[in-house]
Length: 143
Image (cartoon, rainbow, N blue to C red):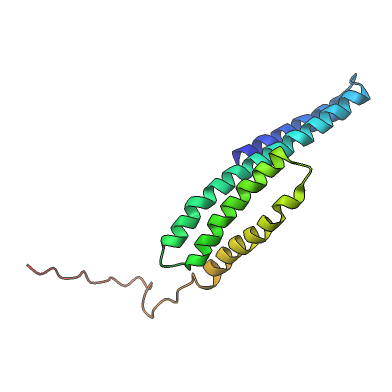
């Protein structure tokens, strides 16, 4: 998130330069605009690196938990691998966007599947009388 906020600062600063750029040649203004766009793209790709790294421990925890299905954990780990492939592709081979297309499908299924599972199955019905604020008696400890 901090990377994206820093990128917005670059965009705002370059926008201010473009608006207040008296005495700056047209070619220089165009160069500032292209530079700010390219810096933003590179920063966005860099922020995806951190997202991809987070998906590995999240997928492992989902896999090990008994609350969520194991296939979601496997999908999240595969999503992390797909994010790493997308990061390397965007950094090293920006002219070949078709490389990351299969990863988009895995990402969509994993992340939307996790969100839907938590929304639908994560809600547990409250037993009658629970949550009413009535004191719960402490369990007795045998001596």
